[in-house]
Figure 1 (tube, rainbow, N blue to C red):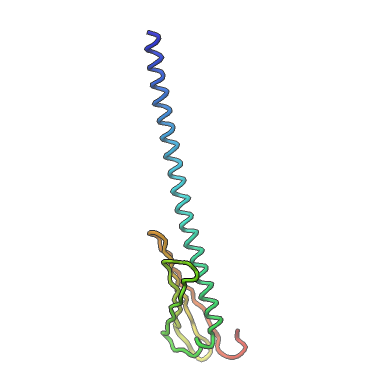
Figure 2: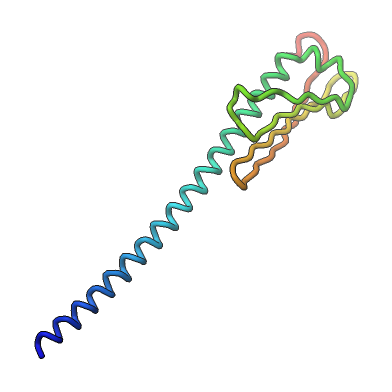
Length: 131
């Protein structure tokens, strides 16, 4: 009879051990999914910042061209060198008057099912010495 009680107790220990292992795996899986999500968000934010910085640099470098253009003109910039496979960078001349122009930078980054879009607006004053 003693032998049967030992086997029953071992079965209870095995069931408890399997339950604890399953619970631990469930928790680790949840943590890993959260880390993967945070990683994707960080990647998209880094891409967005890189695209915005590139657009801003393009605006500073091509200021004379922008000042001569009319409202509604768009430039779709090539971003292959930034290694952002599913992204785009668009610069649009929104409105202008005699003293200033408003230029917008539209960025779009995609990774998997997540997409991050952002719009930045810049004011460019016309005339010499306004750099």
